[in-house]
Amino acid sequence: MNLKVAISVKPLNFYDSILQDPDKFTKLKNLWHLIGESDKRLASTMSARLLLSDLLEKNGFIISLEDLALRPENAYQLPKINTQVKPAPGHRPHLSISHSKSAIAACISLEKNLYVGIDIEDENRLIPEGTEKYFIHENDFQSGVINNEDKLKIWTSKEAAFKAIYVLSKQVESKVQQPLSLNQFQLPGDGTFIYGEKIWGTLNIFNECSQIIVVAKVILQNNDMN
Image 1 (spheres, rainbow, N blue to C red):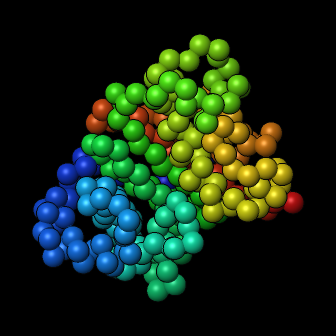
Image 2: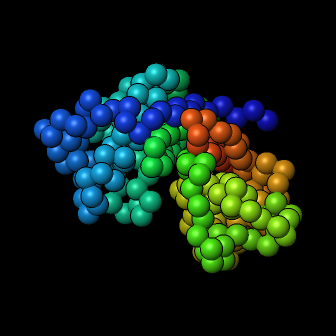
C-alpha cells in the first residue's frame, strides 16, 4: 500500500535570513511559546517549524504561523493545526518535524487516518556505548552483531515510529498493557515496526544531504483499538 505523505529536507541554515534578525527571532519565540532552551537549539526548532509551514502551504493547506503553536500538554511538542485551519483537499493532516546538527525535516500526511513521524540524524553521529538498552530490542534486524550504523538506523527508526504513534499513545498503551518505550518497539527488518506483538506501521529509511532520514507511517483501522 502506497500511503501518501509530503516530505521536505533542508540544510539547518535554510532560514537564517529570518532567524538572524533579532526582532523576528523574538517574535517567533514568543508566538510559539518556546522557552527553556538555548537560542541555538530554539533556532533549530524554529527552522523546522518554518519548513513545516512552507510544506503545508505548498500542499494546499491554508495556515498562519500562529497555527503552529505548541500544545503545552504534549511532552514531545508536536505541532498542532487549530480549528481555524482550512484543510485541502478535505483533510486535516498529521504533522511531524525533526532536526539534526546540520539539517531540518518536515513531513505531513496526505490521507485520512494516516499518522506520520519523521526523524533525521547526521550519518556520522556516534551512538554512545552502553545506551543500547534504552532503545534496542533483541529482535531488531534479527542480528546479534550491530555496528554504529545499525544502531543509528534503529534509533532514528524508533524515534520516527514513536512520533507516528504518539498521538495514539493512550489507546496503544491500554491495548498492549505497557507504556510506550523505544526499547519495546521491534524492527524485524522487513520495513515494518512492531509494538506489543502487533505490526503498527511501516518505515521508509533513506539518505539525503549526509543524513539518515526515517519516515514512519501508521494507518488507523477501525478495529485497531478494539
